[in-house]
Image (cartoon, rainbow over all chains, first blue to last red; front, top):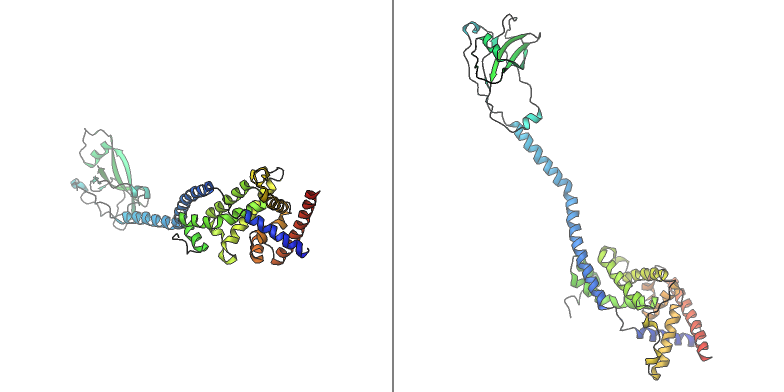
Length: 190
Length: 187
């Protein structure tokens, strides 16, 4: 490029630049940008909250789980309400029954353990020996099985039967020896 | 003087990122005119220049983290966004003919004394607009926006040597186009 041409060109470009030196975008663009800035600010705040929540979500989840488990554990550790038993005097003929080995009751299911505690109003008789059953000594071991029997069966053990009760059955705990033969029985009343 | 007068572009952007609207507006007031004029020189259309300017600052609002101060000043970053938008818009509008009134020479309203100068400016404008985009942006950035070669290289994402060569080539093409245009007028 010749020096004279370049000078003329640069002068022309300078004039072109000066011709738009005061030009600027319309004011409406600033207004649009302000609106977008506010709208984006709201989105950003929501996003920040969401990020914060997701960042600490696992900790929140772990904390909640720990609290729930602690609650369940403490509930399980509470001793069950005592069973209100009322000892009934067995017939004189049954007084010579051997000592019954205490058999641990079956563990209640977790669902049952979580069930709201209700006052246990269960009342039981003492154990009665089952007639003609083998002798049950203190060395023997057995299992306690809850069954439902006809209410009339209480008579065979010398117990009175309330005729006014609606239900024709009664709950009973049967002590079953290791040989599978019933050795003793007690009746349960709620 | 506003409370942001002594703040750097980076500080304003940081404040804007935390939700300070006035800081963003101050940044816009500082940088909107150069961005607009760059887009205007590149496209020859005031409406396209406004559209590009708006898009540049919309991009800044949506992605303030996109600016990395270690890679150059904010102005160069904004020019880079504007360049991308301009080139896309030019490509998009290539099939259409611009009919913006602001690019049409209004000879009927111009006093006779200014007619020659106005015609000359318009000739230069048309010559610049007729350059291939790669040469045009070198001329616009270095000659019309008075940007340094290094900053222009940052905007164009090319080495400084490439900016120099494109600028020289662009100027040579402009001289040739203006010479031909002048010859037509004198016939």
